Image 1 (cartoon, rainbow, N blue to C red):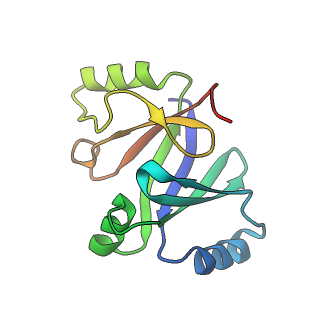
Image 2 (tube, one colour):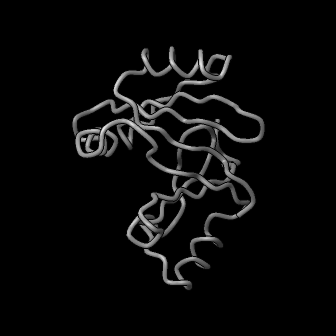
Length: 136
């Protein structure tokens, strides 16, 4: 893994969260994006080489809605950037980590992503990201 790509934060309201993080960081988000498949609206802030990703559920079935119902707002995941998600998944599976995704899939912000189960990563949901050459 090459860097911390972003930290995902689950929030209840995009308006309230953006107001808070815009004041905190002194800048506005550079992008909002809906990821239909995951039932989530994302809002991104660039902080140096890393990002903050706000996650807002867009449906009651969304994993983010379930997370918020169980744990409330807060840090949802940490994402690590890599040049080859599949190679990292293969390496980590060989090390005994439990994979949520066995192959990368399209994610937000022009990335291909895959997740590791928190049961095998000390209670932290881990996302692996790489730039998607097919992203628009």
